[in-house]
Amino acid sequence: MPQTIAVLDFGSQLTQVIARRIRECQVYSRIYHFSTPAAQLRADGIVGIILSGGPQSVYAKTAPHPDPEIFKLGVPILGICFGVQLMGHFLGGKVALSKAREYGLGQLTIKKPGKLFAGLPRTLRIWNSHGDKLTELPPGFVATAVSDNSPFSGIEDKKRGFYGIQFHPEVFHTERGVDMIRNFLVGICGAAQDWTTKDFIAHSVADIRSKVGKGRVLLGLSGGVDSSVAAALLHKAIGKQLTCVFVDNGLLRKGERDYVEALYKRNFKIDLRVVDASALFLRRLKGISEPEQKRKIIGRTFVEVFEKTLKSIEGRAEFLGQGTLYPDVIESVSIAGNPASLIKTHHNVGGLPERMKLKLIEPLRELFKDEVRQVGAALGLPKEVVWRQPFPGPGLGVRVMGDITPDKLEILRNADAVLQDEMMASGYYWKVWQSFAVFLPVKTVGVFGDERTYDYVIALRIVESVDAMTADWAKLPHDLLGKISSRITNEVRGVSRVVLDISSKPPATIEWE
Ligand code: XMP
Image (cartoon, rainbow, N blue to C red; front, side, top):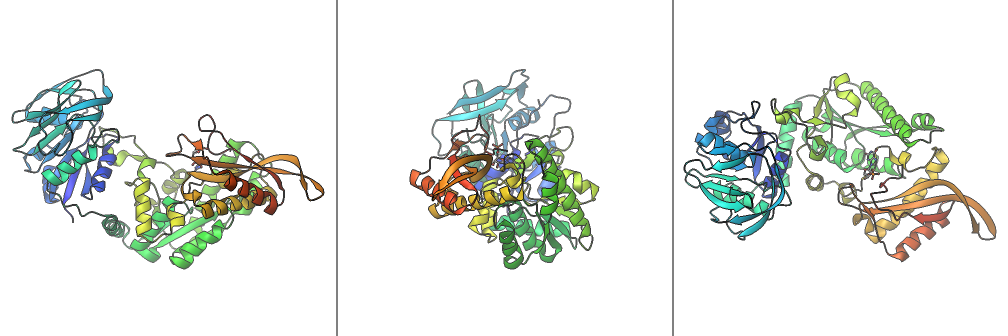
């Protein structure tokens, strides 16, 4: 086991972000329940402790408190936000109750750099989010930094190796926050910086093996980044004990099913079951134009087909694998209970794990998207999978406007394939957030040779974004757009006009639905 930093979770939504920053410093950490006995931390050989933030007041009846013995373990401790309040409360300082929260950006002035602020400028932008604040230092502590409204924004007891900061170093808005965390991990705790993606994989493989034993895991593979990386990781861990299911809902892009089969079945030798349910999906979608209704039908049919397929697979499975990432995890934590264990997941295929008595196994649930990509690349997944653009679950179902027919899907698939081809060839595929074609059920007049045509319209939706919450249309070179348009009208039968969507989100959304 590598040298471990313990992060005690007091219910902050940012606890996983602290863990992520620690990984960025290539140090190994584990998130522990706030009440973990000091004896267990000692037995685990931890070399330092970080006390996370938390939404409660230290005085609240239900406030999460650590085992007081952690302050006697002889390892350095860094208290963040609520963590500082705890230090004040447990070590003989004073914490003032406050009704208002101090929230947002502030300025930190470092008075005494010490080891925690070593190498940093004297003033820094910081991000605060706290209610109560420390009003009297515990014995042995000195103030090291002040902010606009706190004389104790940074505190330390050098002798015992106890440090506290009132703000959040883990958030992006705090300038040089990662350097403060690194100073604590390396400069103060002496932790080794040897934790890499390869180590994550090895550790995760061992963890999956011990959880699964001789059991069987089923995983729904969509072909997207998350489920693909989860499949590759599970396969590395348990090989033939993993069975993947890929549902062809008839709403896939051109060649998608073949690609997934070729990659996983032939290349990775994964036990992959491809279920062709396209006829069922298209039958149920026949004549349906309303977007919400389409989504409901697609979602319900997927769960039904998936469940039926799982039941039909020989041998009993105990586990359902899922590519849940940390941002998918809903941060609804209960402080009175166990914050770490009460975090719920969504995407859990409509209550299916409970109905089928399957235990969830989610090897990526602590990772962020970019980390998942690194894991995927290290496992040997091709760039096309690791850097794949997002694709909605309901697939082309939300990209054919109006009712869905096999003919319209065929036109859309062919147009979309031309677009992807040109995006790949020009390299813009990797530079934009998403690029796809949309089928418009509008017929317009055109000329083809001497013939007058009356054909459909294809819209191009090509956007830039960082998180899909907001987006802007991508300003691609005109000659590239011209080439895409002329190739679509020349090569795709049934299309005589191509238009470009130049709306931003908001007010428009990325998908047309
Ligand atoms: P919108 O259209 O809301 O899309 O701007 C934001 C992002 O989410 C994707 N998207 C979906 N993904 N199921 C999914 O798995 C869906 O129903 C769905 N709808 C939209 C969309 O492609 C974009 O990346």
